[in-house]
Amino acid sequence: MVYGLSWGNVPEGFKRIGGDPRMMIVREDMETYIDFTKFAEPPSVDEGLYGRGALAVHPLEDGGVLLVRRYRHGGALRALTRDYFFTWPPRPFRELRLTEEAHRRGVPTVEPLAALVQRLIGPFYRGWLVTRQLKGARDLWAIAQADGFLAADKASCLEAAARAVRAMHRCGLDHRDLNLKNILLRREAGRWTGYVIDLDQSRLLHGAVPADSAEKNLARLERSVRKLDPGRRFLSAADWEHFLRSYREAG
Image (cartoon, rainbow, N blue to C red; front, side, top):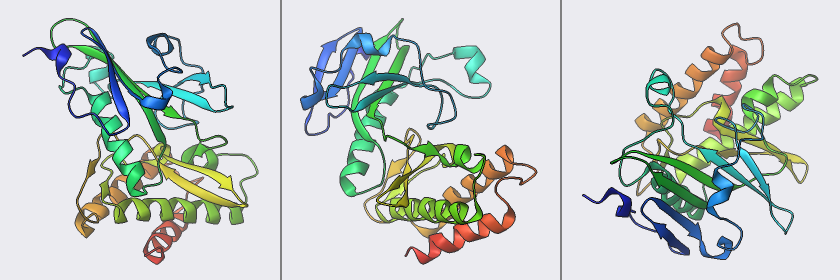
């Protein structure tokens, strides 16, 4: 197998650039703004404020901002394999395709712009994903810990997060790594709006996500609450019940 040429499917409106050992899939209208050098720079966004891991930031001429996330292993694998991967087609390309399709279906998520893979030795590679920044957004866990987070704001944030997760399930996105850090919130037109991100371990179904799979997503989210907030100082049992009630009422 020629690993460096294993691209997988390219979404409509995107194109392939380069080849072994550097491969990039980029949205056609962003080709002039994204190049390989943007992936090599160190991260410059504080970890924990915007989803999983630290991100590199690159401003655009139109006032927008590119966010570049490097793929890294979690848990015990991090010390062993660092940021090396060997699954083909590459994970960044898979997440790009999935995020683009989810975005087109109406899932409240980030706008994917490009993915890059740099092959190392044999099947091993490093990978990056580029999305457009949601200005003013922070993850649910960061917001919950913020000073001056009033009870009314907390209820509104939980309701916005619940609406986003419910919309995700209606659109057929089964997010199997749902946690407090990959639900983003920001104020839009005077109200909180939620987004789901980090779709690397997700799958898209033809119809709505079945009830049992949706419940597993919610259980995964509750586990992250218990892990990050074991004393329930920021998100109480009553808060979680409010989230679930809002999820059900979102239809």
